[in-house]
Amino acid sequence: MMECLKAEVVIEGEMNFLEAVKKSLHPDNESPPKGYVITEELVGNQLRIVLKGLCKPSPKEIITVMSTIDEIVRLAESIRELVNSYKPCE
Image (cartoon, rainbow, N blue to C red; front, side):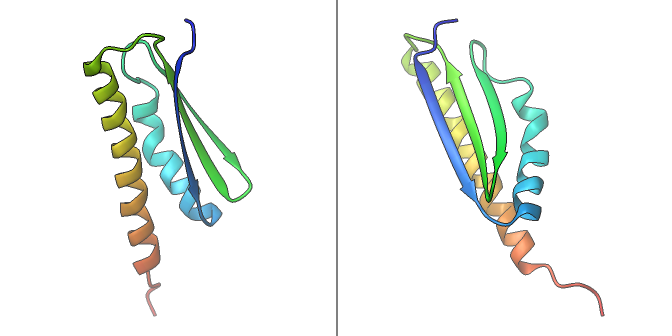
């Protein structure tokens, strides 16, 4: 596969937050849209998610990639809210 389309999402935060995001996304990232590969990498205080794919994507395929990125961002925001609102039982 010739790499042409590449999208990278970088999420910053504390390790427990980044690990929660990675664990939540990993099952879906195992089966990306046809013709694409998704990789996840924890680097310092960042989770880098890279989506690589088709050289000449159709408009429909571009929309699929945009939707995938949107899902990643929305999930990360939801987890961040959950982590920030967590209060241990007393």
